[in-house]
Image 1 (cartoon, rainbow, N blue to C red):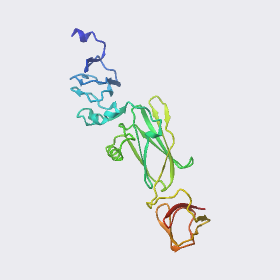
Image 2: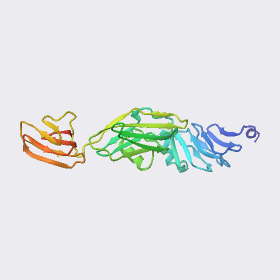
Image 3: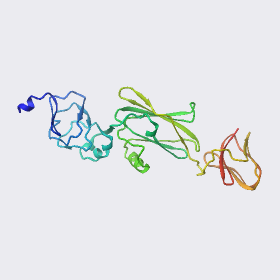
Image 4: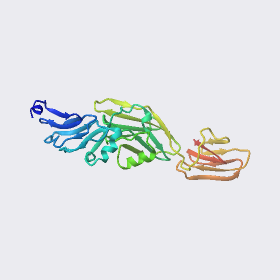
Length: 285
C-alpha cells in the first residue's frame, strides 16, 4: 500500500501490534521489541537473516505468528524470564537474559549458604555483564578465584533456598558451590562483574563462616581452663568432666572421661575441644 511504501526502513507497528520489519536487515542486527507489544504478526521477520539478538521489553510474552531465522539470544525483563521460558515459541531461544536491573555493586545481592566444607553462592545474572569473577579467601595469601561467562537467567537473593536450588538444577542463573573449605573457618568473598563497555564493578567484601563438622556450636570466646602449649592441650578445672578433642575433619583425636585436669599431646594445628558441655577452638603451636 502507499502508506506502507512511504514508511522508512525499519520496524513497523500498528498500535500495539508489530506488523513487519521493512527493508533489508543488516548482518548481526540487535533488534528491540517495544514494551506493551501484544502480538507479532505473521511474516513480520520474513527474510531477516541478519537478526542474531532480540530484546523484548514486553513483560507478557507477545503472541507470535512469525519466526526468527535464528534464535540465539533473547533479553527480556528479568521478572518475566519464567514466562518467556515456558512459552512454546520464545522458550526456544538458546539463551534468555534478564534486563531491568543494575550491575552488582552491593554485597546484599550475593547470597551465600555455607556448610562444613562447601559454600553455595547465588547472584543475579544480568544482560549487561559479560563475565563474573568470584574470589574466596581467608587472607590475601590464600585466595581462590573462579571466573564465569554469561549464562543467562536471573537468581535473586530474595528467593527461598528451595526456589534457588530448583532454578540452579534447571541451569537458570548463577549458582556455584565452592568446595574444599575448612570447617569452622571465617572466609571473605568478593564478586567482580564486567559489562559490555568494559566497566568493572566490585561488590563490597562479604564474609561467611563454615559449620563445624561435628554439628557443635563453637564458642567465639576462649574456653575457660583450656590452654594451648607446644604440642599439647592442657585442661584445668574444678570439677570432673569429659574432654574430647577433634581435628577439623571431625575425627576424634584424644579423649578423657571424668577428669579434672589433664594434658593431651597433639601435633601442631587447630582443634575443636569439648569440655563438658562447652565447645571451643584451640590453636596448638
